[in-house]
Figure 1 (tube, rainbow, N blue to C red):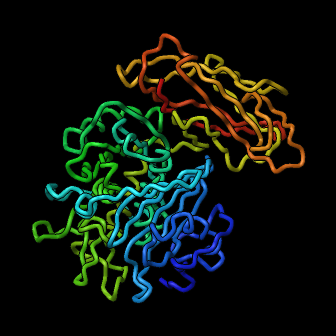
Figure 2: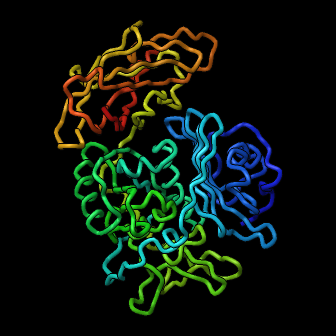
Figure 3: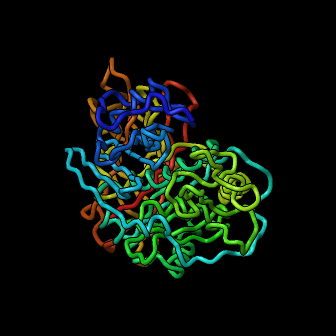
Length: 484
């Protein structure tokens, strides 16, 4: 990996964000210059004495910018940690910091207020110290290089209380910690993708009982969210995280931000350091110079791979430590617990739900949203309609598991300078401007008298239609987590 053209910590410059950058390796000069605005937002508080090397950047359907990169010792030109950053549509910023001298989460709100939450090293470097090695079973067949593993993320209310920012941004950042490790480990075609957010008031603890409980709660939701793996974040932890090996569920402490990248490795089939008990290739690895991959000490942003060199030494062993092989063999299983949803995804989280859902890639001035059923809302577009289209959305009440019809309203516009209209109104009064289709959902207790208080979760299925392209429609599923 060539580290020429790195972003230097002391002299960060501001410039315009880009929406997509090349996968793998270090970024070109142009890409680095384009992304330094995010590094500048993070600042010295995040990068410390290290240089930043971009690995990947992307803009999501909803307008979040997600970026992951390595922190480099400028003297040794050696990867010593990582920095994952997410910029939300409102301008707030969440960063997960992994340095030898600092682990934590940095939150910067839209007005520039900064909060750094430090995390205990032992919860991150050895998140599940009591986990026992398991006898080998078939991990998977084949060597799949390309796969998308869809994740449903659950937050307990206690976990939310310990966040200082948008939980969607936090979830995206956590998934990117694992994605960065996959790219560093020469697995750029395997990625984790966020498909939904759900919230519960139940305080599931990071232990075996909590892990089994979230598995039993989240797995039946696949028919709604079309997800593959269950990822839960708890605010009560006695260890950093816990996962079912060669299965699909993990529970992680929200105060241990590096635990998830380790736990999802267990889902793939990985074990901890090789101790001589089980001579199989599914272990993590530590080098003689003190580099510990995700499954074995978790202090460098890699899964074990004997083909990757680090500080002159291989980061694995073909016989005992090859997590890259484990991921290739598990990719088909992990990405096929649910059928893939080919369409757009959106996330509505209350109380942040007043922020519009930005639908990237829809550039028609005549784009609009329609429901799939008249019981939910209008199924046909019209030329004009006032903002606040009434919707009736079937959601599950967290307190008792019952399904209720929740009244919501939906509006659309073609960008920040335009007027809000009904979600199904096809026209626009913003002539001459580059269109950017946005959807705004709202719900509150005053619209829903008589409904029990608490969290409501579920999916709102919609279609995005364009009058300009007859017969054109893109399916969209909006994950809803709101509190009444």
